[in-house]
Image (cartoon, rainbow, N blue to C red; front, side, top):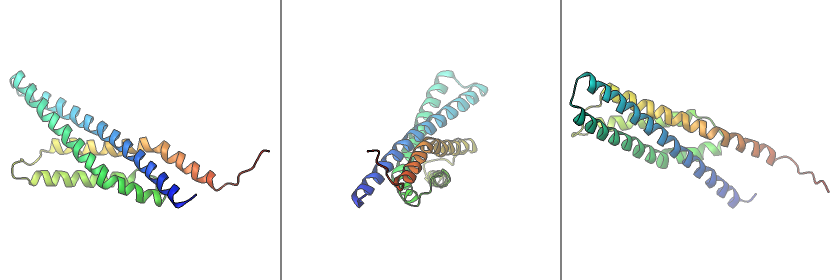
Length: 168
């Protein structure tokens, strides 16, 4: 195969990985939103807050958290995961662990940066746990989604070097 064909195949694989990562981000953001909403709604009922104000407040906070997880995850996919995928694909390293390390690094960096802003209060331990859980779900879901792709790629590379036998 020519150099152009390798670049095209590499770009297609990179696009597939990015799409799978976006799906994983949606899953992780949804999980984080559900956890945040249910825990804060339960705590609000325990402390006997007014139901209307509680629902509005928790819903808006959940929407903000879910949007932030998605937004940070999307930029992570563009600036960290996609280049990391290209490097690891050239090295034929097809495991979830480098992506898990990258996602956890971005999660910790994001929590640190967001807690240092002057207008934002330091995140509670519960919020940190929810965001870390979302990051773990994103990384492991990405690995689950990419496992069939990695297996097919490995099989294709093994069969690429076999000689072709003509039947007629």
